[in-house]
Length: 174
Image (cartoon, rainbow, N blue to C red; front, side, top):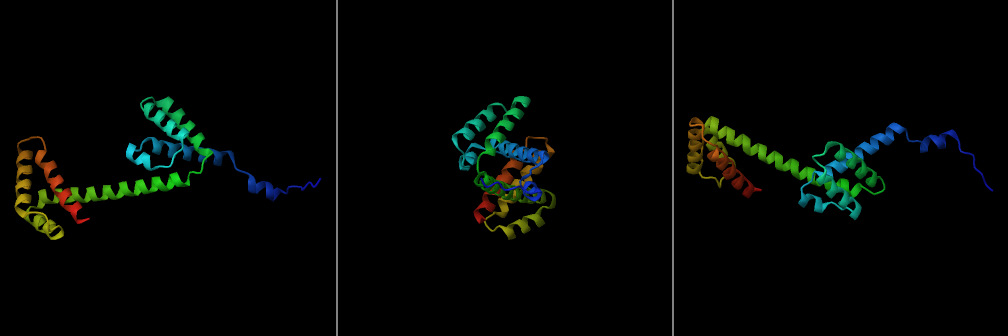
């Protein structure tokens, strides 16, 4: 028999502290929670096996039950320990990136809407310079309706309509 004596250095390379194991387990639980919180269409894009798919479906049912949900996330994390999660992480990164770019576009549109309401014609000229498909007259009418609604304490129908109008025309540019 050929017994090789392990040196202290060999043992140190393989050693993983209990704290590191807990950090890894927590990271997998957070990844599992992110999967549970995805919209169904987004979840379909993630490469999951049957066990993980079932566990995530159960997670949806347990969302309102705090302690049961927490324990179930631990279970999902445990399931994920035995799997290659790089593909899952890549798809989640793509979904996050898409959501971030969508949020950025929506924030830009909200700023335009707010600017139109506060600056009037100057903002209308600026937005028309950026998006040529918008109509000056329609913008003026919507801005006027929003101000009237606000002054009369009415529901913000025109406010939403202005945002929708901006969104439709800015999305055509993309």
